[in-house]
Length: 420
Image (cartoon, rainbow, N blue to C red):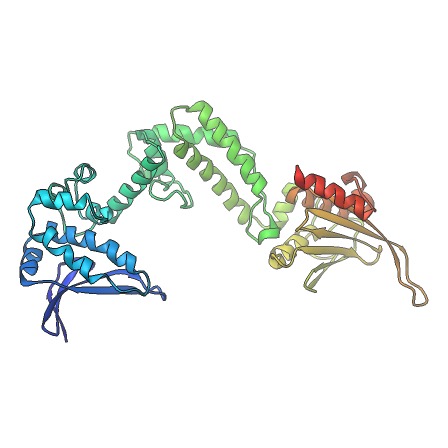
């Protein structure tokens, strides 16, 4: 039988219950193997209950000291009740100076106290009792998150100035550096917003006209990592030169914003428009030469493209790649059966083979092919090769070489490239 004896308005602050006639403190903390919250209890006395009821600050201090014990229990371990009980008298019944001294020796959760109104300066100086004079039952989790973010930055020696902080708030990355950046002018102090916009304008000017292409090898909405790195380097360099007072965190977040926006535009651009931007020769319906093409992958899937298709051959092919490419599916082929030629793209090796039929098989004999290999420089290189083949077949690939028919020679060239 379990009855709640005392509970505060905030559901996460530990409750006092009576279970089988015994007073216990009950709190939720951590999660089990199924990610459900875990609940822990340990015994307390009537004297402890009286302090918990009357003194919010001591109640919160006890909570912050018990939470690390709950973390230590993990997803299935038992709470160390002896350690928890040993905290009761020193935190709830001792003099403030003794409580402060205890918190110098034990692990405790600073963020819990910060969220409930603790004075940050006094917390940092170890004056936890004085820090909790303005404690509140209601938690301000954003305050705790900001404290944690600032603490992480301080640990790596990154001290933000007012403009640095404003830029991070503008991009939504003040609390979490891994958050996808976005423009949030309302989050910035109005007096600092014009300065923030001058920094953003610097970045926009320098990357005007730059684009981040799509990389179907990694999925339909994946972007070209080289393009991303190129834009990021360009933006960060310009911002550092124009605004040398900014710290690295602020410079990086501006670069991240520009790249994320460019990648977002690329991801929402129809494949036909992507191909048109990459190759101004591409026309709806295909080229003057090709009438039909067959696209296949390493898993046996096939897709046909015909000249009267409303979409370009290159757009159809890269969509096929985006749908099918995976870690175990990195070889794709484009074949023109009528002309007896094709190309095979080896994404795992950044290479390509062009295949030309020299003699058709007759009387049960196998056809004779010429196979030539070349190295490819990233997705941009693949796009150029595919576009050239669709327009003019294997002959149009000649100036994209060198092409090597000797497999051993090609492997040596590939190893030399990979070791550079």
